[in-house]
Structures are given as structure tokens and as C-alpha cells.
Length: 266
Image (cartoon, rainbow, N blue to C red):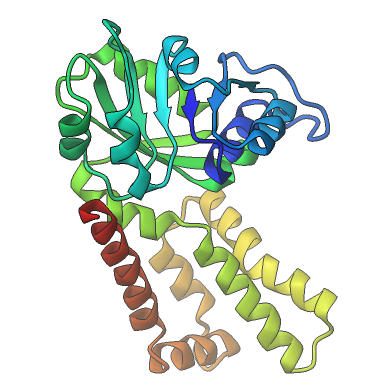
């Protein structure tokens, strides 16, 4: 059950009801999807995706097996303080960036059993990637249940919680979208028509990485193979390095990490 019907919830619900064999035809998810949100328009949209809208928070919580906290980080404390679980001990999974398990336990302690998950918005089409971190006391059967939920959306990796912020700023689709937009803009500025620029830029990012994965070649090997001495690729790579490309990416990622840490303190 989701508390919060924002973009991430919409992507997850869409992913759990997505049929990759026919993108226009939805199938019923094997999970019972209940969503609570204060905004009726969000609930209506999620209902169209296949979830059961529930406007009453208490009824939604009472029906939950896995409680997915999908609100903004600055709203987590207020939300948890207002939850009434009675004698129930549901699994609770926080999707809020920057909020550590320790703080979640302080806000809503045992018998609630906590985990954290960071699913990529790409889970909308079943091509997602989700990082998981579990409370040390969480039973193997509970871990398996949570993994199964997110495995339906794509790949799942379990990482130490202290690595969550770095993972979050690394796997974000914004890197690919930004690089794609920059390549298209540069190619268009240099004289390529927008349609051809979009095709070439998408190939440079998506198709080349798909081929790299399929070949199981390391990134270092691929870079060496692409960099023919005196060739075009070497000129591109050299110019990017001299322009501080790596440093720009690291500074951007650090800004994201700093933002996550500030959300944890707020």
C-alpha cells in the first residue's frame, strides 16, 4: 500500500501493471495495490493505472501488508507521527531520499519493520533499478517479500545504507536525459537536422550501452577499443577530458549528495 500518489508511486504502479509484450494493454498486477493521497486527481489517475484508490488514510493503513512511504522527505516525520497501526506490525518501506533507517525507527519504532528502497523512475516500463537496504533485524522472509515486489519492476541490488546517497545520485536518469539533450543541441548547432541529431544522440547513449552490456566488456576496454590513435573518438575524449568533463559530473553528483544530507536534517 502506498502513502503518497506522486510521480514515483505512479511510475511503480504503472510498472507493476505494465505488459512488455503489449505496451498498450495492461494486465492485473499480482500485487494488491492500494494508494492513499490527499489529492483526488492523483487518486483518479492511479485508479486508471490499476491501483485501488483509498481516500481514507486509516482504512488504507489497516489494509496494508507492505506499507510504502512515498511522500516528500520533509513530510515523512509528520506523516509517521500521525499513523495509527494499532497492534499490527506491517513491513514499512521508505522511498524518501536522504532519510536514514535510524531516523525512521525513531519516528515509528517496533513492531514496525523497516527497509529503504530507491526505485528508478524507469521502473514504469519494467526496466527499473532499485537499491534496497534492510534493517538488521528484518527476517529473511520479509526481505524476500520486499525484493519480490521491486524485482517485478526490474533489477534489484542490495547495498549498505551508507552508500544510498551515492547510489541515488549515480543511477538517476537525469544523467542520461541531460547528456542526450546536450548531444542533440550540440549536433543541431553544428548543422545536423534535429531528427537526425536525436537519432544519433540516442544511439550514442542507449544503443552503445546496451551493446556494451550484452558483450560483457568492461567500460575501460570499450573506451580503449573506441579510441583509435589519431581518430575522431580520441579527439572527442581528449577534448572532454581537457574541458573538465569528469570533474563536472563529480561536482554535480556531490551537489545531489549534499542535498540528500540536508533533507535528512530538515
